[in-house]
Length: 180
Image (cartoon, rainbow, N blue to C red):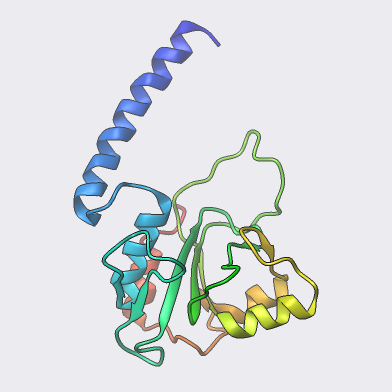
């Protein structure tokens, strides 16, 4: 890597830090995919977030709709690789997953992870954990979820799951985050 490359990376990081600072001022938390994903989900799906970002397993509770009052853990995966970070001891009622483009779990060399939302999934935690345990899947940070389970849990752009219907207004907001 030449000094020119280092200088260019430093300049780009200064720009990114400025943007991250602006986002942090809006969401009132540091700019990470996790915090921003929770904020986006809270706004679009009417979730009241926990006051502490370090709450175990639960990010918040739905405030309206068919899941009103139920706890939720929000995940934003910049790529949907078939893996899901699940609690070992404590779990919410539901997992709400915002996901970027689908791709196999493979080397990231030469790739990118754009901050976008291509699809959204809702998993009933108890049901999902039961299915995974029945298959002998190890529960933890990278639990392998079958493609059929992802499909069954999809609420956007397809409405394959009826757990959390998406209104036209919510769909329009989610489209704002599509990869263009």
